[in-house]
Image 1: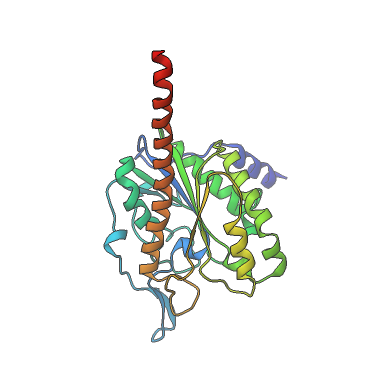
Image 2: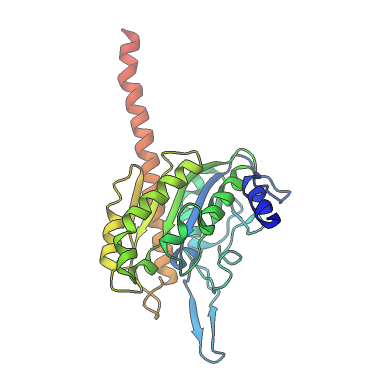
Length: 281
């Protein structure tokens, strides 16, 4: 009974940032999904030691920038660096993902960017539903990020689905679960039109890749934008994107996000042009 009570209190208590660094006016991007979002670029099997290791190669597009921060597992802001998910996806070896190349592409638009890594390799979409640990942890971390003062959500970057290609039921229910996940996340973050940039799978672990990709490409939700990873080069395991592919994917996601911002600015400008002569009259 006491354990249940403490757990309920924990969920109801507002998340706190533990770091003494409280960045102001930071633009927040949530990174969620499974291994290709966490990043496996440059990860390989060292046969001489029989262990999985990262080659530690960081391309220029993914290097650190003082204006790009990340929220650690302990809810502390620090200067972002690869691997972004090193203390999040702790049971796997992490490498380069799309997050840093994305952030370096958009940082000039915002001045200061805060990345909130939440991805865990090998997870199914059913594990990301409201009430499940991964969903609740993502919401907690996202709320902690804005609690630092003056922060604002800009978008969710979502890349998941390889594990759902194994099972026919998971694949057939994918669209329904995905739509619910996006709607619940927007609702709990109190941002009903929060932009979501999701990735259509490059590959999968099972025979239902086509069904999952179809669901990803046809969510039919407003302000959900899909970029297609199909055709990007893969690591020798045939499942994970290479470092260069992750850089390319980050740029694709950034371009999709920036196109939203540009369209919004253009629409706003057109509104002024239309209303101005009416005001004069």
